[in-house]
Figure 1 (tube, one colour):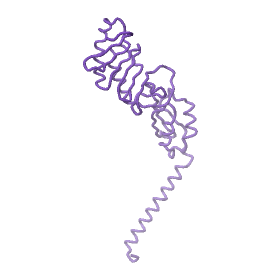
Figure 2 (cartoon, rainbow, N blue to C red; figure 1 turned 135 degrees about the vertical axis):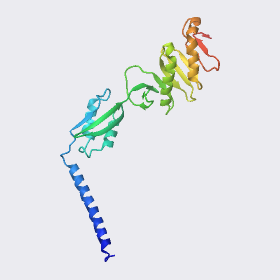
Figure 3 (cartoon, rainbow, N blue to C red; figure 1 turned 120 degrees about the vertical axis):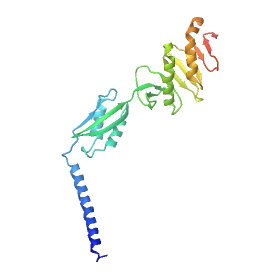
Figure 4 (cartoon, rainbow, N blue to C red; figure 1 turned 45 degrees about the vertical axis):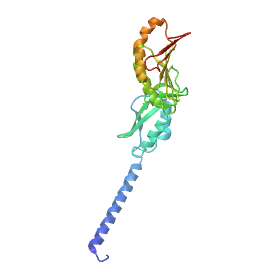
Length: 234
């Protein structure tokens, strides 16, 4: 081996190449750590509606570290997503000296089981609101299913100009709706939209006969429904 000149030259060239790469890598790391590349600003793409500005400023002071090149974007993103009312965040470098942060805030749809909130994506999150919201009652991990059913049933109810104030999914996966006029509708576990559509189609005519709104409606019959009035059943 030691008398093989071409092989020795190849090994020497390889070692020189590796050494050069290591030197350049070290030099690059050193240069990138220099204070000539400071982060001068963290910019939001839109003004927050629910996230307190003071909380954002505190997070930037305490969690965003490093310069333009060394700042950890993933760690920064995760820190922003821990803030209340933040659903999703994207963070990117903005040349020459800033970070650009896009914050997607939670858009509340309803209350969830009396203690939490559910957003328009059917995701449960912690938060407080003062204004009135629909009430969703469901089993663990069913919030998306309940949110989707809410949208479907609300569309079916439009001809009656009634709003859903409570939507419940029982442990046996039966659906119940409470409307803003106090009417309770039992939908059961099958063909919920079709049953509700049949009821919506005939209920205005039933009012002329009943002379007053129904208190409770049971749609769990295959070819009809039962209407309950105070002291009467039709």
